[in-house]
Length: 124
Image (cartoon, rainbow, N blue to C red; front, side, top):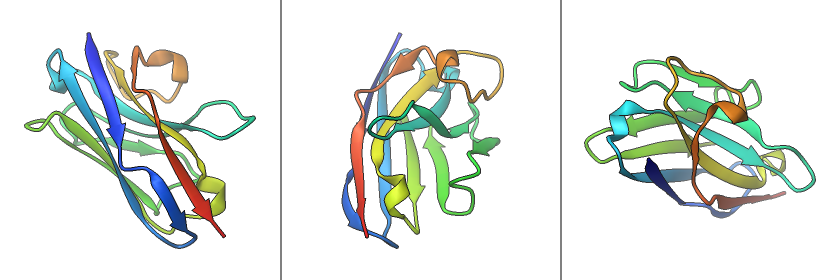
């Protein structure tokens, strides 16, 4: 199995930027499709973005397209989420997840391994 630890969350003003990191340990990182999800208070966990094993393919939720960028460094066993033009609706706990499946999926239940989450708060 793989262990995931997120970092980089914090408080930022609307319009600002943050970069989240997720460090993986355990099994070979490049074996996994990696995803980012988020959960706001009182809401279900939702898909944000995902990246293929090689990094050549990505997928984004409509709500973050053009503002967020996912990337991975397989040599460093790390996946990143660059978040720009943040707005208060982006406030949530952000989770990193790993999927052993054959292609990028957006369903929460598809991902077998999860980090503990990092809080992102955007003030207006």
